[in-house]
Image (cartoon, helix red, strand yellow):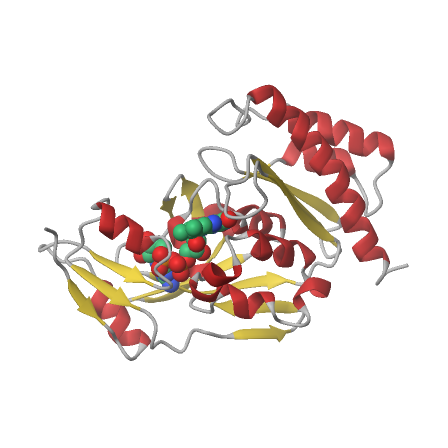
Length: 284
Ligand SMILES: Cc1cc2nc3c(=O)[nH]c(=O)nc-3n(C[C@H](O)[C@H](O)[C@H](O)COP(=O)(O)OP(=O)(O)OC[C@H]3O[C@@H](n4cnc5c(N)ncnc54)[C@H](O)[C@@H]3O)c2cc1C
């Protein structure tokens, strides 16, 4: 039977020292444990030590300078119950509510969702559309990586050995939405998901596709078709057509390619409609 050392550092410095890889084997970070404990139990990971992040001062949530900064170990339920989230970042609020059930969200964290980088993640497409930045911290200091560069492939990220995710920063984007389709609404994996956001700073839409292998992706050709903050019906039609043509939309046990291609067009149309209405309430 596999065994590992369990470490509970009290400070970020201690945590960074503890996660440094050593010749004796790897160390893994443990946040809410909703993914990692399964992997340990199934023997999919066999680390030398498991480093709990629960004592670190990273359970933070702060609105500042037109952006939301979320500490990596904040449970998703705390994020979900923030009174401003649904108004200032609707796409993120919808994505957080899509993750498992309430009990799971009391444990699961944003850092764990990023660390796992699963193709089925609900948070990653929303973070892509919202232009999130991920703050990483390691022995040589901290660095900030745009989410699109942080995600590499299925379960692969830009994290270097010995680094931890400290926080995520997301600019306020009221004109945004996240929509998904599942066989069962709760505790299931999305067959496909679409996130959209209009950045007033850059005056452009971002469109992200989720629930597809190998990772959630931005779809620039669908973004370009949309144009300004209030796309015409024709612009949305062209954007939906381009999104439906994305090569990541393939058949697997959850849905056929044909169904997925149809679905993303419908989801995009609804998501843009919702995002324009959310933004319109603030910028009539
Ligand atoms: C029943 C069930 C239903 C689920 N439904 C959904 C769903 O609908 N949508 C969805 O997106 N996900 C779902 N998940 C997946 C899971 O709950 C999320 O991915 C969750 O956000 C993981 O967070 P955690 O804190 O539990 O991570 P953990 O399990 O603690 O860690 C996950 C990975 O991230 C790494 N990690 C954690 N924190 C850090 C950090 N700060 N720095 C560096 N690496 C770190 C760990 O080493 C590990 O590799 C579900 C899981 C279960 C068990």
